[in-house]
Length: 135
Image 1 (cartoon, rainbow, N blue to C red):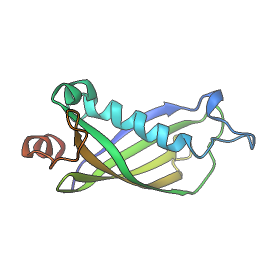
Image 2: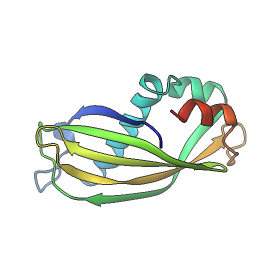
Image 3: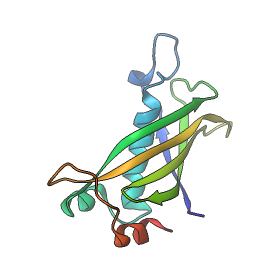
């Protein structure tokens, strides 16, 4: 229903855990990095512009299924796609793939809640934001 976007990321030495692969917490960092990149590059509404409008996003649910390990110097592709909007929330589906093998290393979804930066409270996603994201 919505367009899937992609961001490429190189695994860094500080992403690696004692088992010599990417620490599980870094997968959310990769998703955050990709969404930040895609807001400006693909949705044409950078996070800085979003903040200037008085809006912010907070993660209210994060679900990750780990499939395959990622190692140092791997390049990964983070693919995201909006699945739905509902009131103050939107759900973003994601896949993190090893660029070389094209195999999924992790996949899942995050529910984001829009908040007013003035009040810190959840607010209904305005139609103009939905229109901007509904591509």
